[in-house]
Amino acid sequence: MKIAMLTSETNPYAKTGGLADVVYALSESLSKLEQEVIVVLPAYLSVLERNPKLTKKGSFFVYMSWRKQCADIYYKKKNGITYYFIGNDYYFGRDRLYGYDDDGERFAFFSLAARKLLKFINFQADIVHVHDWQTAIVPTLIREQNADDPFYKKMRFVLTIHNPSFKGMLDRFFVNDFFGLDDALFDQGKIRFQGMFSTLKSGIIYADKITTVSPTHREELLCEESGQGLASVLSLRKRDFLGILNGIDLEEWNPNKDRFISHSYSGKNLEEGKRLNQSDLLRSFNIHWYGGPVYGLVSRLSWQKGIDLVLGSLNKELEKGASLVILGSGEDNLERKCQTLRDRFPGTVGLFIGYSNELAHKIYAGSDFFLMPSLFEPCGISQMIAQRYGTLPIVRATGGLKDTVTPFLGFPNNSASGIVFNDYNEAGLDYGIGMARSLYADQSLYYAIARNAMKLDHGWETSAREYLRLYQEA
Image (cartoon, rainbow, N blue to C red; front, side):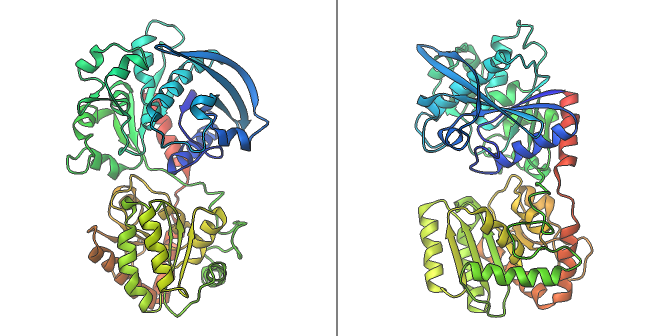
């Protein structure tokens, strides 16, 4: 099967979040299952600077109403996948991937160029898999404008919703101005959402199959209270809407082979491995151990991630001898609050504002518990990584967190793999911290559950086979 992934980011070239991890790992897994996969993404300034030896395939023009922009096409083959990069200095020669006032125009250009690229390289895809609002318009473009073209006629489309908060909202004027689509599509409601034109809704209506990144998150999106406005439109496509859990890269996240941690370990020598890596972690952040559990947090510092809950609940824990290590960046007010907590507990709170892959590995290996008290979390991969390292996640029962963590309920249980709480408030997290404290006090039980967590198979092969079945249905 020939599969084209159209995405705004993917490892190892461009990443701001989990989308990049998913596209990369899924593509590699499908390739290992002997599928022919290409990945198409923008040639951001950072991509070109870090990969100066990309091969140039050629160029073509993209027309958007009165605009005429050149698309420079580069490619690179890696691990059985061909990556194609669409370059344009005006749209992508910038410091960041997103966050500009003209993002709608930038990704309109990218979507139009990606469609043209398929014919330019003569890749007649069986499946065009689009991701989030940035490329969700492509099924609409091909179905409305290329229905009679033999090259595109048999293509089928899958849309994956990774982050439903962003819907690609544009004024109706741009239906025609950017994409050359008929205004009737807006008037008929096919691409209209809350009075505006939504590229994400267009994908929901025009794709053959729709997925999101965990079974529980699918149910949440179909519910009016938690569907972020999408419940009614997704209900129209309920039979074609599937939740497929993400996986993790078992090669990168392997405590028995991890080059970033001080001492490799497995379930057989978990106690020693934890002790040695915890000492290294505390040294790396220049903090001390005062006899309590070590809590780790690797996250965007965002309101969605429950950072305020952590800062409240952990205040009390730190006074009892616990330690806390935070790695992340994000909203200014949350960064400042984290710095204030570190200043209040300089000997027991470690903080790195930014991202370091090496420090992330050390936190997963050296912490006793990993904090993910998210308001919502479509899938999440950090809790699965923590489990692989025998670090027990403390999570709220939402989205993929609920699907991947079996709760410890206060007694020995061969299936427990972490701590789960329900209420999104400080009292809810206090409950989770209390369960962690009681578990930490019984080290034999703690390590029994940590070994349960390490045995879980969160690899991508199972998920890739589910996607492959979905492609075949489409």
